[in-house]
Amino acid sequence: MNKQDRLIIIITGLLIVDTIIGGPLGLFFRGERHLLLAALVMSAIYGIITRPHKLPLNLTFANIYLWPAFFFGISLIWVFIVPLVSGSEFRLAVQDAQSLILLPFASLLFYAATDLKSMARILLKIVVVVTACLALFQLAIWLWLELFSPLSDVPRSFLVWLFNTDKSIFVTYSRSGGGYVRVFWISSIWIVMAIFTAPLVIKRRFNVIAIEFILGAAAYVSYTRGIWLGVFSGAVVCTILLFIMPLSKLEKERWGCVLAGLILAAAVISSIDYFARGQYGFLSRVTYVEQDDSGFSARMKQSLALLKMWEQRPLFGWGYGAYDKSNFSDPHAPFSYEMLPVALLMKLGIIGFLCYVLFWAGLILKIFFFRRQWKFSNLLFSGGLMSYLISAHTNPFLYNFVGMMVIVVFLIWWGAEAADHESHLFEHPR
Image (cartoon, rainbow, N blue to C red; front, top):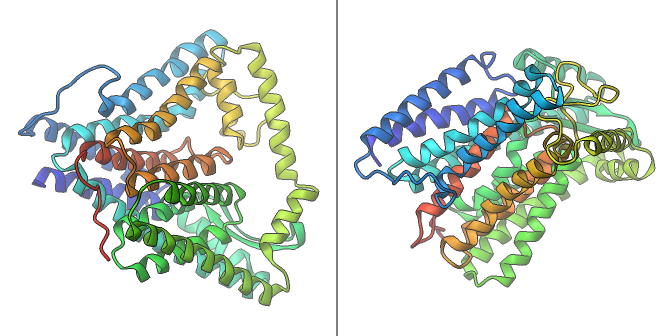
């Protein structure tokens, strides 16, 4: 690893830390994020120019390092052309899709880095460590609310002061469904990725269990069904594949540490919840969904309205920024919907939505062909990406700086897999 790689790691690491700790707007009203992105572009371009062994610039889809840039380029059709034809507002189209500009950064890093394997390992460790700190902070707030629920406005007011906004911050005692304490804000979506990354970058098995316990507990107290569904689905898929694929005993044991930490977290948080309130918050949340959930009802109404819009322009959709004028929740971002798949179908149409699905599916399917066989890191990447996409597609978390930054780190991980054909991406110490 040369000095240029270290500089890229420092800048990207600072971006990751700011995105995890800084919440919706960053530590300094997003100003530092723009500066860091500019510095990352300049350092990556300099790294490409000075790289001793340059990668061939093959401008075809066979060049997987350009997939993120290609996907961004294709997406511009639904930013500049489709809205012009459909009559959607151009300003909203740019606002809706602006976070996609982060995707070409992954392609830049692929070409600039001389040791992508080491870069991915360091950045993923930063994600796990910083996200674990975030999770501990969330758990501390949750315990406060469990013990002093009448003072629930105290931690929320502190977070609004800290993040300079009240958007995407859910820190409250909810009385719906029998009552439960919820602690969640948009940066918490990093927890999903960290759960599947920890066994790759944390050495000792006990430490893996401890980290997974912290992350699993924070995911539990988020009381966000999308995160629950995503983590559960990813864990089930990884567990099934683990016993189908010819993986080593050590790798199976490390995944067992993940499951042990998550199950222990669910048991402990459920017990605390029961002793503090005399009921299980998880069951209250699930029971409320089955009876009458205004959130679920709102999602269904949104979906029906968006499908009616899609029927008017089924092939190319309405473009980014489009929304149903009689059904939106945020007047400042009316294009933002909880049911992201239906919203994207309306915006992109069948053709654009197919390109969207093929991009994500291609990332996972391509993993199969990197070494013609499954490895532990392949399995965790696939389970982690699937888990994240499920979580982000049932809530408006993906199309923003935080959500897309998670995707950039996933792409760096994916690129490191592609660059490391002959051996494991990560060592798994005993």
